[in-house]
Image (cartoon, rainbow, N blue to C red):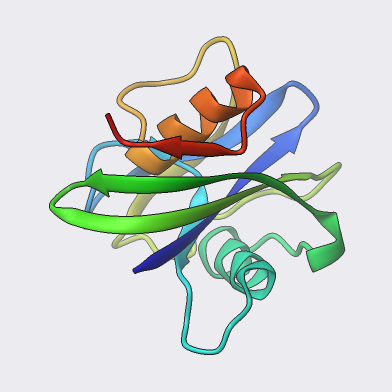
Length: 135
């Protein structure tokens, strides 16, 4: 399957939510989900951010972060990750059955455990790379 995720940044902070259910329950990650049939990744990113956080972003705000070959939680995904800078707006938990909370964290003090796709994207970003794969 194909997953799409968005690291939303506000200055030195990134937005992370604690997952309550599904793959990676108990982990922290950013907004994202499955690419729908016929959907382009950028449209998926905009849709998932709105569905999960209530924040409105546009495709033009998205910057490619990396592509990951992720095998975790008993599944195999190609994950397309973007980053996006926002200046205002308050995230809301739009899917309370799936997510406990949204909070802002500095990159040097992230909570644990991280959702695998987000963790891989952060490692790729630190290396200045566009591709990463599960160990």
